[in-house]
Image (cartoon, rainbow, N blue to C red; front, side, top):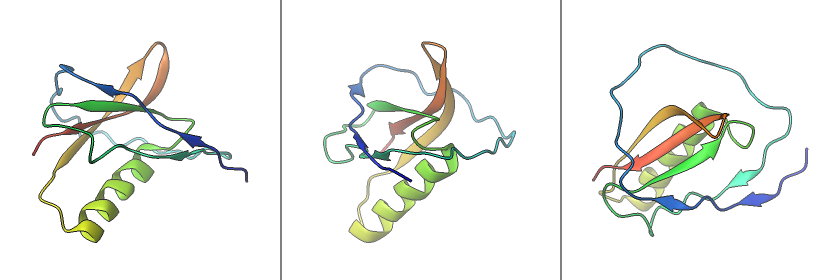
Length: 95
């Protein structure tokens, strides 16, 4: 499995949709290492992570690891998202 890096751009003023409790699974055979710019994000900012780079569960796990390791007060929300006909996960900083 090869890994390359992808730095997603930070988007502003993307509204956080309500929670959808339906579970979707699946994993890609080949993924890129995604660096979520936690420290650069301000409250209300969001980033889009394409599904082929990292599945939704991996993004959630990465966020939890960051919060646990840094003991930060930051909080994030994730939602399944389609952007330019590409499925993925959007991550919002909420606190």
